[in-house]
Length: 174
Image: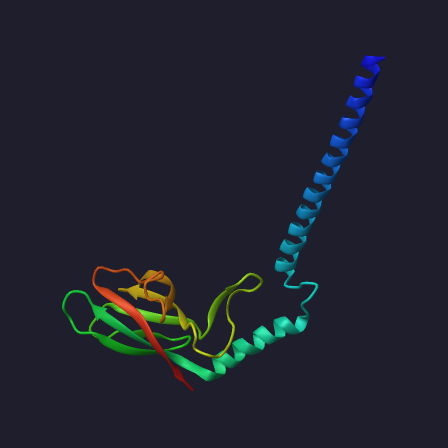
């Protein structure tokens, strides 16, 4: 009889452990399903709380940026003792930097740069809180830099060259 109590106790404990394992499995499964749902929402650009107007608002904001900002001002500093050159480059334009072998192209300008989990790199407003420019720099017509320059954080992903240092110093309005 004593062994029977042991078996019963074992079965009770085993069933409780099994039930708790199913609960844990359900929690993991729920977490997995939620993660997949979030990934799908990011991929499609829709969330339960968002509407297509959110996407339209972002597109509208980007159009307003294009309408408001004409270009950017940069300073090209010579590391070899030459002069510092202030230049203006229109958004979507490429210019030759005088007295250098450099060409600079401005692909985009975001006055309030953020990395948004749904849309990637965006601007959250027209205010110049975190100005950034997506630029390409060519030396003797060979691409040597393709990235972002930040006015407020010039040391984040800076243009690195033996001869020149290039900084974003401002924007030009239309």
